[in-house]
Length: 306
Image 1 (cartoon, rainbow, N blue to C red):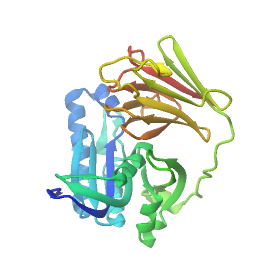
Image 2: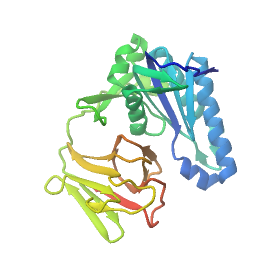
Image 3: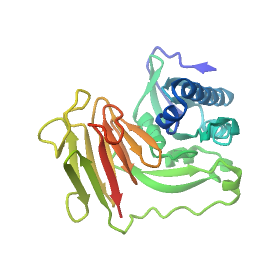
Image 4: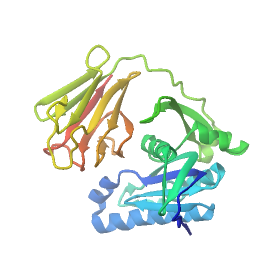
């Protein structure tokens, strides 16, 4: 497998791929530490093997996530599809009734390589695609679509637009239909116009409640400093840790912290964001700096009401 070996900084254009295991916390709860660790490692091995098969470079692994680069967007899609097929459709990845799934995000753009790592706005764009993806999905940016061959372009559909921290423009989000049954019944692009039905976000922390809605509060701050709208004290919590914003009837959580923010949805999906944003959907738990289960002292419970 190709490994990152850069020691001198240099800029180049590559396809950046993030792939991670969905719901790993639930996996550890269901299987126990040892079996869950083995299962996650099998996923990492499959993701690394797919990277090698299609000429990619594994930059690093972070817990249950792999970050890799590829010389072309097609190479990245071939590898991402191979990863999904090797895990999502693999009956051997079902353990005690729990099936393991991954999500993949990709963006093509310039990066600076230094000390066996990569840096740049393009890395954040790729990470954002992964944080938006659901189990079994591959999400890519519009810029990446432009780099694809005709064959792969025929297997993508736009499903949304999103904002990325530090960017004033919106980024088009495309799903790659990597499963044969999806490809043969290509669905029309989803209407990405703002949703008309007003929604309400209720966030509870202890006996405090924040309510965001179109007709009232549209933005709020969370952190350990006393001037935040919601004050949460903890040694891993930043003074201004995160912001909540109502944007085009979507509730966005924007992390501003050192240690990141964890979102555990009640449907089992989990997200980690650090210095980037994520859309809150459904209901679940937000925890600052470290994972906190529902009912724990530092758990912030949220619900979207339509």
